[in-house]
Length: 478
Image 1 (cartoon, rainbow, N blue to C red):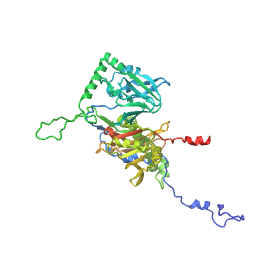
Image 2: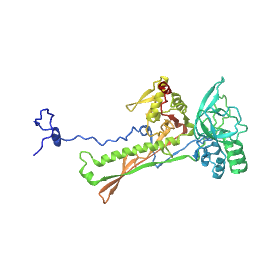
Image 3: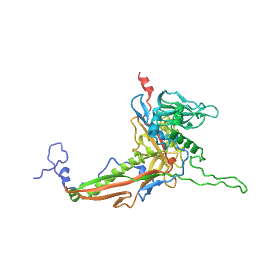
Image 4: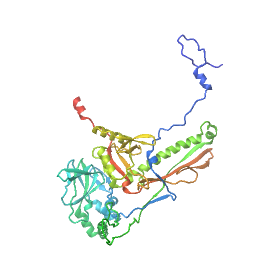
């Protein structure tokens, strides 16, 4: 005997007079959705990057010969509050030491740096005075100030952790500080007296020869980007003898090998055979697995130490904020390159930028991209990217990119036509059925990323995400 299901509620306790909904559902067909996944993001970086098919598995970026080398970031080891040391091999990030490989000499040079604490507002060096030391910023924020035409001070740069000050004077007779450097916050620097480097070069022939070669290369004619010059003439009349030359190439160009993300998908044969109607279990498992692989792929394109954007932006294309992600910072980031095509920022960084705009009464624009309305600044769309990390100090970065081979920008790398290809650059290979009746599939995505010229990518660092505390509220409470 079938017990009738609960029917409509009755107040007098009488039994139902029709079939209840609970029992009726036993004969009904349930409409089901596909398996949903919270971890799927917009993945704007993968969608907006132009992808180059790399047939041989590697991609060589050929460039003109670079004579004037930019500064890199040195790194430090912290063994206590007052025990901070520069990692010797990272001293080769200084242009004068680039390529020097005597590790014993670098270690001795690193040991001669002394720790110095700088108070907020203290002047580290003053424009026009002789350069007597080389400083490395360990942590803190310092501003570079220049005297304007009519006597006022103007901020021309912000220095952060790992950046050198005064190294451009190495090898020059009687060098003078070109700008004043003042601490905006409390900071710690490592200082090396200039005579220490000269004394060390005097007794180490290899270091003296390296510095002499650096000076000779610095005196060679170069264009405004530091590349070997190609002489050209203009504005002449008659038949003068034209100067000529050639465009020299870098003899050690960088090559990018395709990286990969892999996993093994396992599906029991009984599940695939008996429970694949109306949805194919294997196909659904594969769909969600590929989504997870693509999420990891974008994370690698941003964070991988070998080719990721955050670790491969040229130090000369990195700037630090002075007071949060202000419109001024975004304008400076735009001014560092031609044809910026997009910004990439953590959603919280976008919100912090909007707060700065609200304070100034500015309304950021918007752009329509593939039918989506996204925020924009100066007509350049700002795409959210949750793969950009947020540090423990609640800071992050904002990337600015120019993309495409034709524009000498940033390009994604993959290879199509691989065996058992399921999507471009991704294949699914059947690995067989085990003795436990489980079918295995190897899912692999091949990819990488290349920055064709240094100014194709820029980074706004130390973007503060937190709101400024309202101190007036506490005063009213008291």
